Amino acid sequence: MSKVQRTGVIRDYDMHSASVRIGYGFIFLCCCLMVVLAVFPLIWVVLAGFKDLKEFVSSTSLFPQSFSLEPFITTWNQLGIAKNYLNSLLFVAGSVVCALIFNGLLGYGIGILKPKGHKMVKRLVMLSLLMPTTISIVPLFMNIQNLGLGNSFTPLWLSYGANAMYVVLFVQFFESLPSSIIEAGRIDGASQLQTFFRIVLPLSKPICAVIAIFAVNAAWSDFLLPYLVLRGGNLQTVMVRLFVFSTEQTVNADTMMRSVVFSMIPPIILFFIFQKQLTENAVSVGIKG
Image: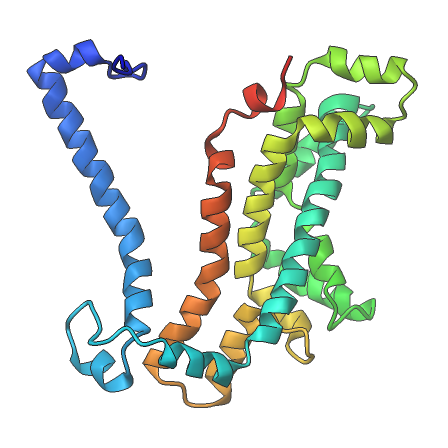
């Protein structure tokens, strides 16, 4: 079997140089260090969850004395977090759908349809990126209460359907699509919505996957707005439940560690499933033929 040749920045024949090998080794060590710095906190939290309070306070060892799952089961039952997992799942699913449909439609209008005034709309979208999201919390919450949408997922879903960053990503991708494909759909009699849902959106699977991952991560870890909207009802998400749980009673540090582990599991699983979509070339993968 022939040896696979490197085709990146550093190729096989470059490795004959001592300076290249030293530089390659230095870059490799830096990458390993960054991986350790990124992964170590996650590993520490998981391993700390296996310790009881006495061991957590007194022990300096990274590894626990035993790897019993009983403490996690006890914390799970104490939190009653199964219902909150379901609430978070509904919240995340609706947020992803709204993030793809509404932001995609606006990106379709700016990037492909380009009606009169689309440049001004694009500038306004870009301008909104300069504004901190926290300044909109008060008026947004007041509008939600005035419309009677408190204790409901609807305003949370719609808030993810108006994300400037997602619009910019859609616009950049749509502008790279071949205009011939769009024109072919119009010649065949497809309406603008049919063109979007049957032609543009299927060709946009890579960017949709990336935005879906961003939306899942943002919705799952979102706390402030869900806390304001859902804190008084039975629709609390995992993040809201963890905060409420920590304020309702005295919670030991080891119990909170195990609670944090429960909140980390879904995003980590989704990352390993969809990590390929984060690195693929959107145009080369989404457009074939």
